[in-house]
Structure formats: C-alpha cells, structure tokens
Amino acid sequence: MAKARVKVPRSVKKGQVFEVKSLVSHKMETGLRKNKKTGKKIPRDIINKFTVNYGGKEVFSADWHPAVSANPYTSFFVKAGASGPMILKWTDDAGKVTEKTVKINVSG
Amino acid sequence: MSEKIITRKIRRRDLLAMAGTGVIAVAGIGLVAGQAKADAAAVAKLMKTHIGGKTPKSGRVTLELPQIAENGNTVPIAVEVQSPMTSSDYVKTLHVYAEGNPSPEVATFRFSPESGKARVSTRMRMRGSQNIIAVAEMSDGSVYMGKKAVKVTIGGCGG
Image (tube, rainbow over all chains, first blue to last red; front, side, top):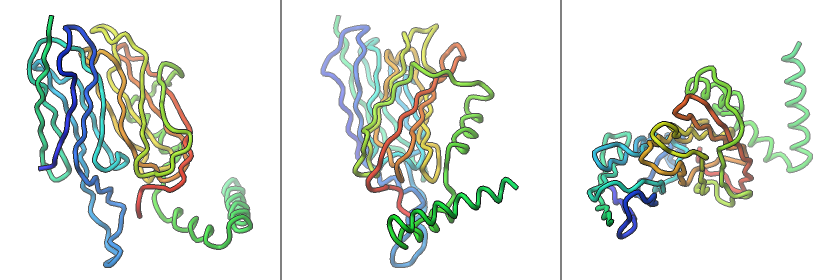
C-alpha cells in the first residue's frame, strides 16, 4: 500500500471553505518509458482514480492520466458541514487501493 | 495538392532546425514523428467527446502555471473557475488538456456544491513547451475555457 499524507485545518467553522492538501506516493509509470537494458517498454501503472467522501457524499473526485506527475499532489477545497471523517481513496491500474481517513472538526 | 504543401513546409522546418542546432535536432524530430503525438486537433477531438458539440466561451477559467518550467516531470499547475458554488450554480467538471504531450488528456476533476470553491492544484508532466487548456462544465450546461502557454526546458515524458 502506498503511503498517503493528508493535511486539513485542525478545526473549522461550519460553512467555512477549507483547503485539503493530499500527497500519495506512487511512481505513476506512464507506459512510454523503456527499460534501458532490455529495450522493452515498462508497462503503464498509474493511479487513475481519486475520490473524496465527506458527510456521506462524494465531494470531489478526479480521473488521472499519465500526464499526472509521480507521487501525485492534489489540493482542493471543501465546505465544512458537520464533524466527521473525510475518506480519500486512490485506485491504480492494478486495482490497488490506498485509503486515508482524516477527521474534520467543525466548531460553532 | 494540399499534402504537397505540407510536406514542403516540414522540409523547410527540418532544414531550419539543421541550420540552427545541427544534425542531432533532426534525429530528434524523426523520433517525435514516429510516436503518436497530441496536438491542437487531438485536443479539439477529445474535447468534443467530453463536452459534445458545445462551443466553450472564454473566461471564468484561470490557469496558474509557471511561464518557464525547468523540469517537465513536475510542473505545478492550479486551475480556478469563478463560480458561486451553490446547489443551483456550480462547476461540475473541469478537464485539463496538454497540446504537446504524447496523450492530450491530463486529468478530469469533478466538483460538487460542497466543494465551496472550484479550485484545484496538482503537478503535471510536460514533454515540451506547449499550450495547456482547461475546460469547465457548469451545472447549467454552459462551458468555459482557459488557456496558457508554458515553456519547458527539459521534457518529462520518457520514451
């Protein structure tokens, strides 16, 4: 399982729009590179799907193509509803899923 | 007839490249021609499959990219779309295309009214200097487009 890091504010006010920064380690092999010794193409292996669930809803998602850099970094925004978990999920070509849950603390 | 004109143009370009940077440059052009290469036409075709026959209006979409990117392997990119992001008026999807990459598709982002703000930043690969295009589909069906040119010193697509 790939390593993932997610950063959210320690606490947010209800209705506040806050930034979520995420970083996942993945080589994001494009399928275009060649192995220098054998001359064979290295097969494509990228994260093609990224989804974010919060408050029981999918609030943000992305489809990625080989043009996304290795160890994909993404930052996006979410409006604070109620306190609860935010689940970030990355799925790669091999079907491997990396999941990370962060707690959103909503005050007031 | 038109084909003849095109081949003549390419030849002239090759000659110019040879004069400018030597034979290595010509060998490079040969390699590029062998690969499938995205261009403005490929982007237009792909855009059509995504947004249908709609014509994107310019405006509301802002791309933040460096003017000159030293390393094509990781070029920071941020795209922001002006929208109130309410349940009746929000940005549904945002497509990012690259005109000069082996494949024109970069990423598609889906927002919701709970996003609060239609802004996303990430890092992307660029094979060379090119135009990056972002197209936003709004909840009311309208489509907006933004474009920015980036110069790349070292390309980052392998191959």
